[in-house]
Length: 279
Image (cartoon, rainbow, N blue to C red; front, side, top):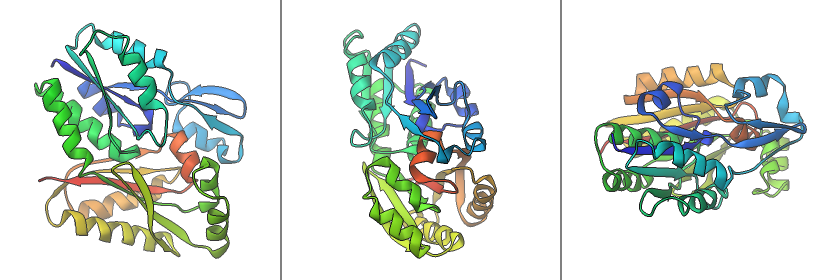
């Protein structure tokens, strides 16, 4: 294994995948009610949700170039090449921080890629890249794989409590307010660096049906890689897992919490399913 993979805690990777493939996860710093935390380091998603933290003051920032540089330097003791995968630049300064850190490493050692994916979609790319590196792929080969997957991976999300979405600053406050008043729940798609609504539903069940119907249109009967994520909705995520297992040919299926950073952006009860089909 000569290539190391670096990602952020926003992927919410399953711990066993991190350990199996030696993935380096850079934690996202955030502030909850005036207290500093590192995502997944000194507080877990479950702990944040138990604090009823949706109602508390919250802000976040991208990891610093120094955070990425330390990760790169640690990995350079054994890796010939390092591939750092980030969420889209339009959502965060992560890619810029990682690029600044990469510039301080020996030329050609570190490559930074904006995957155009978020949350579970990025997790699928992270895992696929790390698996390829584990099996002996070089930096160029892993890079090509990531670029191919970035065009094929999708994430569908169901926003159960739309009143929280305005806190991201990326949605006009009136939109989630009206959605909440009308009792409708947006279904969104995230793909290739863009997020857009694909419809609204009245019930959670209708939202799940909408996501799975649209997913079926994209993957057909082929084998599919899937990550299900939730914001303080473990029972709903488990129900979704059972449906997915019974209705799709799952080559890979993981269920994880949202990072608190994602949970604060989507609100409590949110569900997401990320996937790509085998070619």
